[in-house]
Length: 176
Ligand code: S3P
Image 1 (tube, helix red, strand yellow):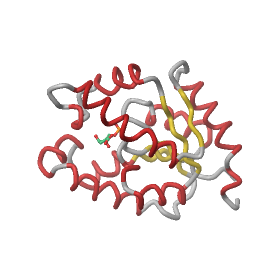
Image 2 (cartoon, rainbow, N blue to C red; image 1 turned 120 degrees about the vertical axis):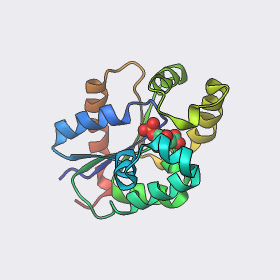
Image 3 (cartoon, rainbow, N blue to C red; image 1 turned 90 degrees about the horizontal axis):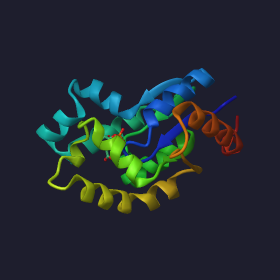
């Protein structure tokens, strides 16, 4: 049986789009931590950041993640900062095979800033903020993931296919 697959990576790397395609390929249910937080809080991520601040969001994010322990048959897409807490990193590796979906910084920035929905990039100099955040996180993504896929030159369908093939090579971490 295919274990759960967990997608980590920076804003704009395509976790949700690739995750939905993986769900179609595998029959696993697509789950997104940002969606779970939004539903639990009944407001958008931007509203939560504006009204309560980042720490509050991180608590909510850690709670929805914890609720997924023991759940089988899922493709889990995670918010880009979920890996910041060591306890979350452990939980992610317990939940499934962890894939780091990466892309070149220019590509990530273009995609991440497109929607205007990323509160962390609402600064005077979004590109500088982006560069700082990514520099502080790359090692954490690398240390958390079973493997990395650079999706810069792939469409979502191709990335999903490659990711699935690579994930199958890592499933021995799980007993089933
Ligand atoms: C965040 C990434 C966002 C969302 C929140 C914080 C981050 O998710 O969780 O805005 O800290 O990188 P995406 O990675 O899906 O954009």
